[in-house]
Length: 128
Image (cartoon, rainbow, N blue to C red; front, side):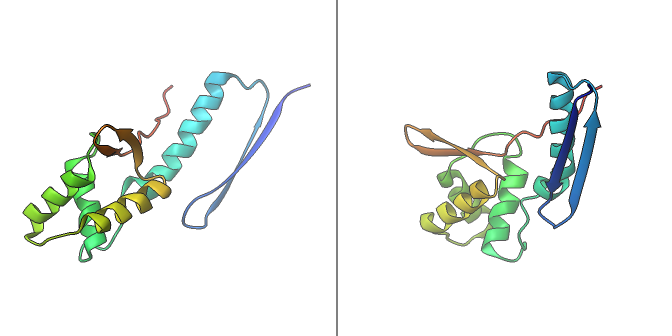
């Protein structure tokens, strides 16, 4: 009897997708399915969002431009923000913004000796 798999996914914008599979489902095929789902979500997650005229938007833009793949700390964001925008920003404000982005899955964080290190998660791509 063939195996069947039905997967329902809802993106952050309210769109729903239903994927149905029938037949042999290997680990490799499941990895490709996961990559496909990540690719669908890439458009909504690729940009951290945020109005560029708000402090939150400015922080998001700094992360997108300066740290697309590398890791950074809240101190890195504070220093860049103050250099780029010639205005002060509090550590508590940056920490709140980074926590929000981490909760949304748009950043990952790791405990280091000196505090937290943040980075953008890697997006899996489908390969043939």
